[in-house]
Amino acid sequence: MPYQPAFDLDLNFGQQGEEWIRTLLDSKWKCKGCGEVQGCTVEIKRERDMWHSTGNLFFEFEWNGKPSGFKATKADWWIHILTLNGDNQGALIIPVTMLRSGLRKLVSEGVARVTPGGDYNKARGVLLPLGQFYRLFK
Image (cartoon, rainbow, N blue to C red; front, side, top):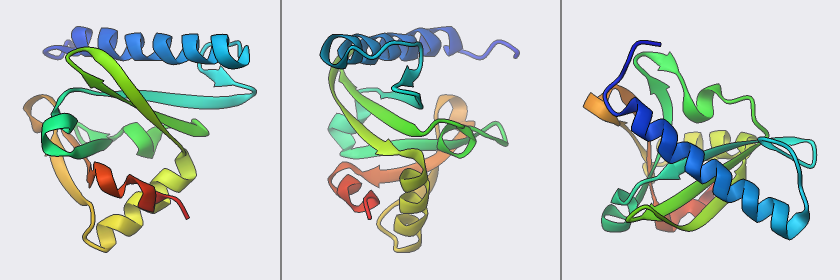
């Protein structure tokens, strides 16, 4: 993969989130394994501070014209960590199948919308108001 501006910083930022979740799971439920919880795979994403000021979550599904994020993952579960000033504030957890179908439904209803984002707007994703997250559940 060619170097992307801030890719190394974003990778480190994401890995810190993975370690936070791993530590929580290991200490609370004695789950073991990198990226696996009781045999289920987990995709972990960290949302930077912007959610706090906009009230929106960004779920990436395409980067540079290729499937990414929730569209490309093979994981069973999606964990979306909310950070503020680099500190983890909490996390939203949802099955990937429910995330995909729920986002599709909410976009079609006009509750969420597809928008560019990320470095130089090379990503596309679904922007969902945080207060509407509960509507992803059936």
